[in-house]
Image 1 (cartoon, rainbow, N blue to C red):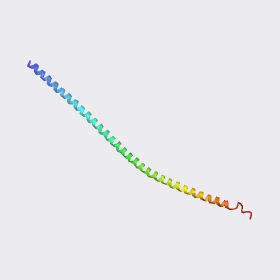
Image 2 (image 1 turned 45 degrees about the vertical axis):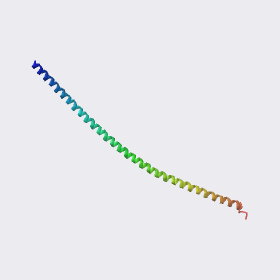
Image 3 (image 1 turned 120 degrees about the vertical axis):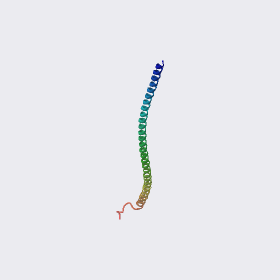
Length: 115
């Protein structure tokens, strides 16, 4: 009977060792998978950082372009205002000259050929 107990203990011990070995293998496999997943995540994080940097650069370029556009737009609007003022002054001067011509034509004889 002691032999059968000894054999049972050896089988039991052997099973425990086998189970522990299997569990160890499973844990090692899981650790490798986790390392692989960790590397993938790090790569994805790097890609996201690069994309964020690219977006920041693009955002800055857009902000600079908008600032330039604002300056140019202000200059154009200012020049348009100056041009409108010049056009208004020109039209007023043209009107005054036409009025003077009309005034002179009313006071001058219609024909100077009769002399």
